[in-house]
Length: 372
Image (tube, rainbow, N blue to C red; front, side):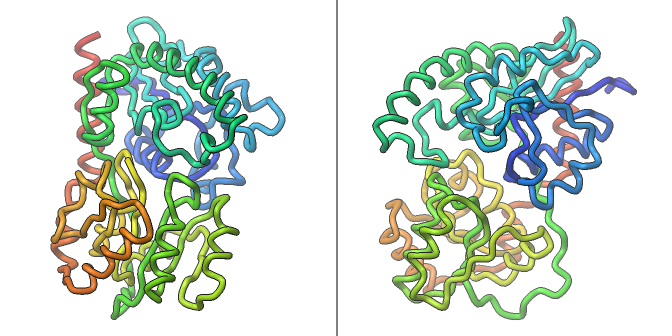
């Protein structure tokens, strides 16, 4: 790759710390001098990610000037394609957009520049997948949301034709890119990077749920299943569903809500868990199951999406098909009669390294530049 190439990273929005932001961190390791362009930046919502982002050159779109932008992220997505298209990126030879739901791929590079789009998934809200809220169940939001989504699907398709190359994080996402954008893509798996556990627990004594506490992640299924079976469960994460979950679990002393935790604490929690519970439907990849397996913890996941690609049934976890507490309870009962070797579980994620990610991204940069 050309030395001293001017590189810009473009990320949908910095309003929460999830899998997409972990990939952004990895891209920052590959291109440490690159500024980060984003719709808007809300450090108060980013937890531990705020520390490393504070060291970066972050440049927001005009959406950051709108009062309440951190709170009203969803309605503002109507303006996001225009906002990203207005960014001045004329000085950059390479642009890598990190895209999920906020149209960062709408940027307009200079003539001759390379634009790689790392797509975490085509926007779930536009293509019928579960989202953070159950907006379809309310008549008013369903009506206006459907109108807005129809317009944004057209825009989304057009902007998806602009990047030099599309990169997918999984086979599932690659298939969605092919279906919705009519484009081929190259799969580059994200890295799993957690700090080592210095004093791992001597016994795995609880089940673990790690994710945002929102509708699309179905934490209520994990809580209800463990409540019904009187199993100990630790819940990591924040979200709008927390009060409802706490109400469900009020009668149990075995269900503990930990909120957001540091990566050091998270790694220790993974290492002490019997299994990670992952009742998410149609996940694009799912970094959380990969993190759990990297600590030798098997995963009990819904049989759909990315986990079908990353979990080997009987070796690193097992699946359930009915997305309900009853379906998860049946899986938990099966799990109780099985045994998993932590070393074998870890081997299933050996390719998800920062070294591999760096090599594959740089190889694609070289390939894309040769085609321009």
